[in-house]
Image 1 (cartoon, rainbow, N blue to C red):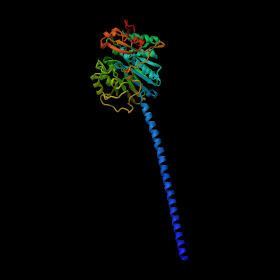
Image 2: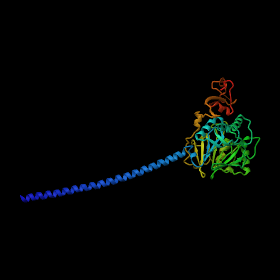
Image 3: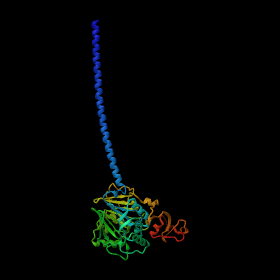
Image 4: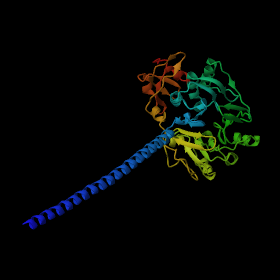
Length: 424
């Protein structure tokens, strides 16, 4: 009996010890599992934090790149920005450098309000220089509106007189600012922030072709350069070459909107441009740019931008390289051998030609009062403007009829006369 009890007690002790070992084993295993879990959790947390930082950094980089690509933000960068405004069949170029601003030409009457609106969008209050390459209406109409709104320090233009109403309006606006025309000579240089522009034309004046009287400038910033020469044609180009003035430039604004009488093989050899910009109206009646000029540019290996295809075009220089930022891309934005362009060539988000197409016009100030917008009908043949309800509008040939939204005073400053019947 005693032996039986002892055996049972011994077995019980063994079972208790085995049980305790099992429990201890489980407890020890749980601790190991817990530590492993904690290590995994700690590792995941570290990875998550790293991923979060990487994601934040990537977002910041994307934002910086995106913001740098938005048209108009180039004005906040240290450098030179040259903006070729899409004014249709005409020229209008805005330069900005170190909070200094300059306009060269202002486009036709149809773009006058657009040009003023664009400058206002850039928060421009005054201009260091305004240049009229010559006095054709598709170059100076918009300058009348610009002079009506923005204080100007120096006005530069060629030394001849044009017998047109818009030229007379230009002279009146200059007088209102107590300005006279500065007639430049080839070789004259002007400082523009950290940039400098030099007069390269006209070398001589022509009585036969006013286009060859165009003022030409070579703008330099650091190692980069731009050449712009209004409507100058072959004779003017030959005179520039013979003058010995430095003409080589990275960017050439094609003269006379791509007319076959300009941008000769000889001037392309002298300038050696990598890029060419053509300011031209879509489906214009002149056939600009001509196939001859496009072929010459292709043979010269130029990358070509056109306002009729690319809209408003910005070219930004940091002094070493030039980055083009067109309003829109086009399959034609590279005639000849397309050069590798920066990824920064994205659509701009600035004031665009859409604002004009949608007839969003700015109120151009006349004196101290702002003129109210109104719809008028212009007879492009007679140069008179009418109320839409005027009986003369009903008799008007559709090809001579153009709708205009803007101020009465603006039309008058552009050289149009009010109809004496409806007295708009």
